[in-house]
Length: 211
Ligand SMILES: N[C@@H](CCC(=O)N[C@@H](CS)C(=O)NCC(=O)O)C(=O)O
Image (tube, rainbow, N blue to C red; front, side, top):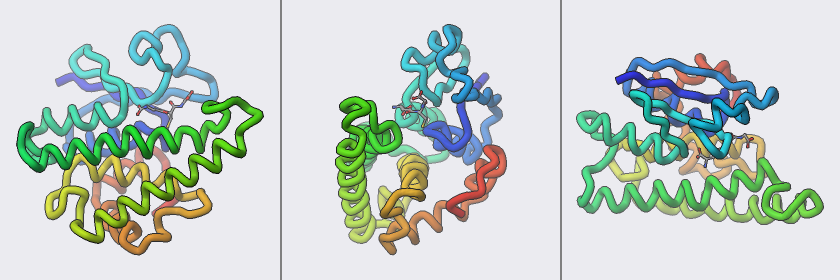
């Protein structure tokens, strides 16, 4: 497979980059400078019409949306058993948490980091307040889930969901209530951060925070 990741460091692309390293799949990385708006060029918009990172191109086919990309990689790497097979009860739980992340956590984070988007620049404070409440509620739910089961999202078995979840946890690091506030989330994050592939993605993206 010919794989190219379009990304920018420390963004929603990190989960994809990290999973590629975990799988040890050869790939090329194209870094886009968001400040220079390289993600809004006509060439890039052909791959990702929303003008966002990440995009993964596999054998000429572009796939957008971080959650969709990591799920697709999990399915392609079936032998690694990081994605439960379709139709199994575990798949149902997997889908539930993947969609929770993509539908609840990610949009709330988007509103936190881009607070003018939901209701314009004049409502930035209200948007951030609402986003923060939603994010903290979501982490409360995840903490409850991991306390009842764990140590991973799907229980005993590591899955693609853990890579996406850890990335989303990282995004809370400069928020008023980072995930480390919840002991169960802190312990979970420490476990995920201990993976050699996490250290590798950090090195490749030049990251040093939240270690
Ligand atoms: N739903 C998209 C969201 C991606 C997203 O918001 N990416 C941010 C970086 S974390 C981005 O590209 N921001 C640049 C912009 O909005 O112009 C996904 O999961 O891929």
